[in-house]
Image (cartoon, rainbow, N blue to C red):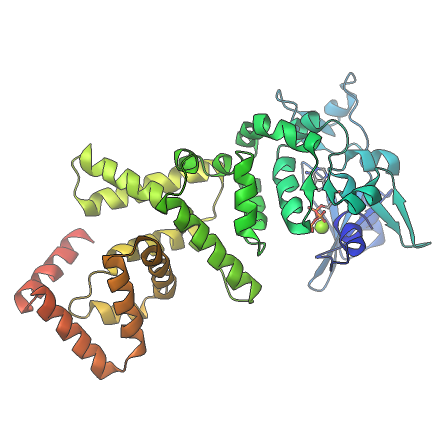
Length: 401
Ligand code: ATP
Ligand code: MG
């Protein structure tokens, strides 16, 4: 066994999963286990499946012969012009395998035959020093795989360790290499970063290395400001998410993406109104597509989540409009709860009218049906909306939706 499980046990933590490594090739593993499937292109692996449990089995990796094009010809090794490893399927010895791993704490092997730990990269020392330290030359290793920068931050937060100065230094400069990572891989990584239960702390550390703006380019200008309400909103959302995860409550990635992109959306919407002369409704809908489209260039958010992101945003426009049957219909909307939670956080940060609105929705959910009627009547009287106004709204709704 290798990697995270050995590290976590040495740190007194419960491993999330167990990675197995062997000198058998994936094909040989498949011959041994009927319940085995081979996966991966960039990094070929065997998955041995026991019911809902999957044991990931990797063959020892070796060095990539730089002068010799043989490996590339055989489709085993491939490197981009930036030094990025596009394929890593050259097999080797256990010592070579250790050198190809990312951090010293992740390169310890536990031999189940004799219960010994093989530490080829001074991982034990790093555990004692509580230090994340790259194996080999950090800059070269980040160029080979820029995701290692995200992993350094993730492990530092998760394990409560420091990133060693040599390992930290090249990150500031190399952060833009994140643009070369396939957006689908970044989606997976971002979930691990933000849905770990320590999302706020992870976000702050990513930001220190200018890595967060690489993941969310539209937040670039905002992240350079200080003490803005926009930043307070992001931090509040991440804090709430952490609290929910740590109390075993459900979270959807869509909520986080909706929150992170909320201010870019508002800004874009303003731009369409001022420069394009659009009304708010059209500007908002156009901006919503723009902002999502730009984001998925960097992080491939699956469609099932972008649909929810759109709904949460669109419901923010509908929550203030409570006339007629709208308020009651809103309660039935499958995404009402998410939209309401979103409104609560906006209100908490922005105050003012949003607070009144959020309180109204809180009350409206808590009272019985009769009182709901009273609340709606009070609203009509207060805002001077009568039957005439109501029908006008209905007409508008048809025209625009
Ligand atoms: P956790 O599963 O708790 O997130 P882990 O260390 O097990 O942490 P995995 O992503 O499961 O992380 O990877 C297993 C091991 O494979 C790592 O411990 C490391 O040795 C190696 N590894 C994973 N990704 C990389 C990478 N990008 N570059 C080099 N080695 C890697
Ligand atoms: Mg693991």
